[in-house]
Length: 631
Image 1 (cartoon, rainbow, N blue to C red):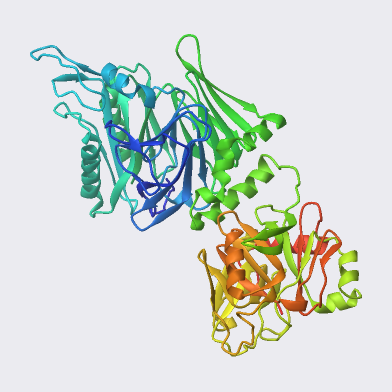
Image 2 (image 1 turned 180 degrees about the horizontal axis):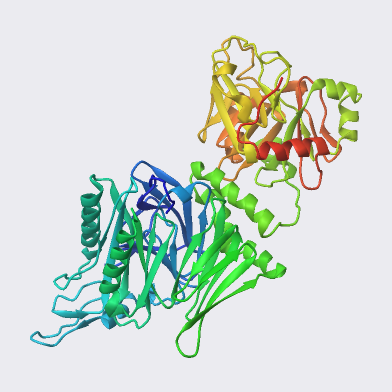
């Protein structure tokens, strides 16, 4: 909770964005689990279960009352340990969890509860119910219950649930615990949360309250911590055994109210559990895994506070926190540096790589994943430099092509344009290629015209202020962190081109939202649309963040070119200069010769580094939210 700020992003639900592998389950209460699917919601008393298989896992996002919460993400599983995640902020097993800039002013999961043991394990779920929900033989005849069913007799229940709610205005909270008459049912968590919301609404003079924490405790636990984190930047704690929890909660609530707290979040954790909280607004990433006796938390970026039942430990990027069970049954937390060789293994682990895989997230989350990747490469582990550009001769849908594949995920991939004047000054295309250190040089748009939009190094090339009078343009642009975009516009001034590092105009569009088809053709275009013409095109895959440049070796129609671009993986693509204007060179070797009719596309990577002035401009562009565009 942040002092003096309203709570604008209180989670309403968790959203399963993607699922990988088999036997990933979804459970309501303790009913029989069903297969988890994309789009399922995690609400109160619902949880995600992932088997202990490194190929199985799920990506979870969160939504508030007004839409998606962009600042908290969870990847569950991809571990040899079974994993279970409870909405909103609790888990046991293997996870990669990310917080990022902005969420300090929000309420969602600023303290994530992680367990050191799989006491709540999918494979022994029913045994746990039998152990903890013990039936009393007083006055009733015991009967066997089938797995997934619930005791209907009078029972001595050792598991208790709790729920807390807070107002979006930051002015009020409510806590609900089971009373003596409360009956545990599959819906009891929802009933408690309804009570918590009602209490919160009564003191906040409105109906803006939402659930902010929920969970359970076991009355037979001998060492338990009750934590109340409030808007005054204070965390109040009381300790006792499981039977004392109601008294502890009442006492700590009264203390917070008497000290002027306006809104608080309740958390409870046993001696084998910890609370993990980011300490800043910078992108924070952790990877955790637990076993029967240990919990290990690797901090990949920024820093966190880890709170166990005894202490608070500050752990920063490159360090790990180990919570280990001692011989006497207690737990002890220690901190240590992560050796370089282990950092590489962690970085390349299925858990981390699946979190970083853009295909596991929605497109609007992609920039956030890129932030984590960039921070990870700086603070934790920088993978060895690898070429970001590959060129091959291949046949796609019966068409022979040159295909250039450009990895935009690589932070050292820099895409620019070389004006025709620079090529002429170098003595022509062959001399320009020979004297360039570029990984790739390829033909771009049609013959230069003052109406075309072209941007390189964050600056407009040429006089692009006038329009050709066409009703539609197709422009491929790269924003900060090489985020690709293909858009159509009527006039240049209708969009703020300052957000683009690179942009090039072409026409017509060949692939739109994954559908091949020739669209956005200029009204006065003289293009041969259906004839067999040597073609060139550019496009990208949004999921893999890969840029493609294609030159056909044979004449084809525009529709056939559209089908080729879709077949290689493009969900967006547009046509470029064809005929004798096709050009291609890789690592100083000319592959396709022709006329230089327009600025050339020039790509640098880790092996073929850009000149210092371009690299400096690139780095500055990444660090400026709204770079200015000069002419």
